[in-house]
Image 1 (tube, rainbow, N blue to C red):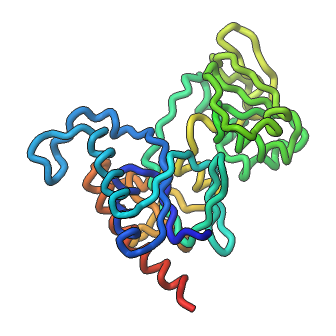
Image 2 (cartoon, one colour):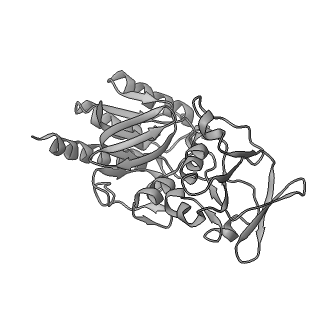
Image 3 (cartoon, rainbow, N blue to C red):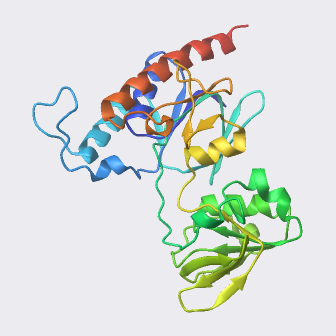
Length: 294
């Protein structure tokens, strides 16, 4: 089955876009994990239409209910990869979904690993894209930093270049979906909390909180969930200052792929995200209709 639109992110931008595509009779699927900075907002007082403050959690919940009421579909799953052939293929831990158009509305991801010197070795042994940089570690000793399905996905891609791959969880409890035993059996697993990355000009070793060290040639960061930057690096989406570049229609440089909300580097307000989502949804509808013409 081919969806007309797949939307990655169920925050204000993603749900806003879906409201338009669903009402235009476009078969729409929204993916989201429920992890949003907006959930932490106790009282929102600057969003139109509410005489009294509303919590971020309540606003998100009402948005989802609104979409479900008109026939939208929401899956509580993490997207770990996107690719494009004739159509888009969106991958999660449980399957691959096909769509004519895709919207990235993942917000702006902020991850704090607590590991010293991570920034220091970016581009010098620390990487964020196995598709981009895995080739440079052919036959070498490499690692992946993460503890869930996203990290396993990156480790699986890295195994195409080297069989010496260690998954470092940095003391986090692992959370893997069923059916990944074949990948796990090919990896080494290190669950020690990490203190720092060390080396001279390039990364040479990981130093753990207990004082022990692990020598390696490089490590790929796949911590928590895939972000807009992850998708951009792998697909060649144009970026500027860690944000996705879009035109006035919220379209990226890849035909049929759109972006909206905080991941585009706009003024971080709900109203702006909703507006961008609406604009993206409207333009996705036009694009999809053209694709479906005989």
